[in-house]
Image (cartoon, rainbow, N blue to C red; front, top):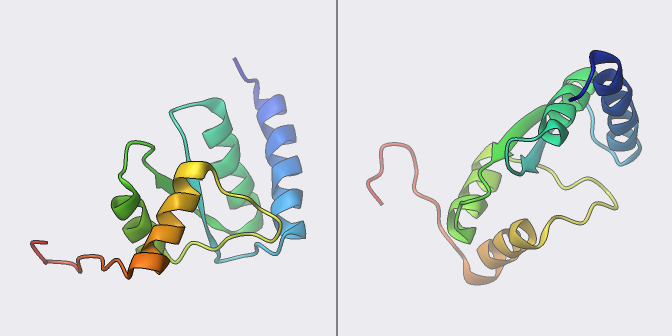
Amino acid sequence: MLTYGELNAQASRLAWALLERGVGPGDVVAAMGRNCPELIVAFWASAKIGAVVTGVNYTFTPREMHCQLAHSEAIQPQGFTPQDKMASAMASGASYGMRCPTSGSST
């Protein structure tokens, strides 16, 4: 159980950490995980600094994840190391020239 006070304190700490790493208003950051309090903190922290969160489904394949990250134009904050699965998706998209389907495409 997370109280509002705890949520606000955690979100404020994360908001400052994001700002220190170059995330600012209008930036899109990706958050991946199961439904948990940490995701709520990430959304709240991003809102505090005017950034936007794109929630990445942890069951996505690397290709699906790469497409979401590319289409959302999510940034990688300075000094941030993504989780293994997300890092793999970012690397595979760049390394293998993955193409994402566009809106209305059937592939």
